[in-house]
Image 1 (cartoon, rainbow, N blue to C red):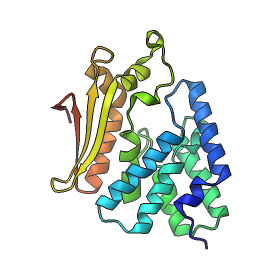
Image 2 (spheres, helix red, strand yellow):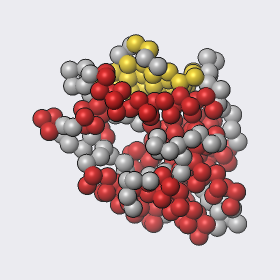
Image 3 (cartoon, helix red, strand yellow):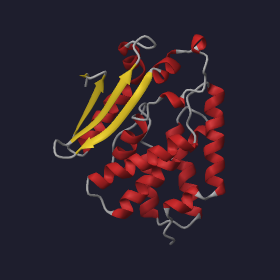
Image 4 (tube, one colour):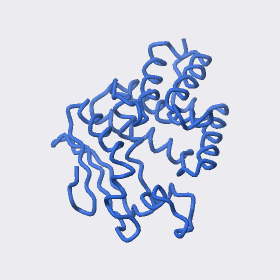
Length: 221
């Protein structure tokens, strides 16, 4: 069995191809950016969460790998992309000699990151959910013509600043957003993201922490 490192995954041509093709499909669907900036941030934040929780270094690295691979299933189809991505990750990691117990942790997290079916079944899964669902930022919007924005574009583009941080002493996980309400009323944000924010609350609950959403200085969750 081989000890597959995060750097091995980042430098793997097949992985890079799947991420690129998954994002190309998302672009065709009209979705926001799901390429290297998104998966790199997701990997980093998932690791930060587990590090704060006192996880072992290898578990932290497995969370990074799960974060980096979590959206590759989009190159098959957006529908059930978490499950198809988990199967793709299984084959990738198994072929490279990763031990089954490590593969199982990664694919369980990937298979449980989409709000339509996700459950925080493990620390890695909970960290991946929080890292993925809190990546809300203007730079993810591909369409720059405000006149043609749909609600997804408006919601993401309206976010002028997003601060995600962990408050260890209070055991709080906080997403603090500054939103341009001229572009997007707060209720539009909730129409798109309420399911994701509820999932973040469940993921925080897994760790015995609380999830807090602050919008324009007001606690809304």
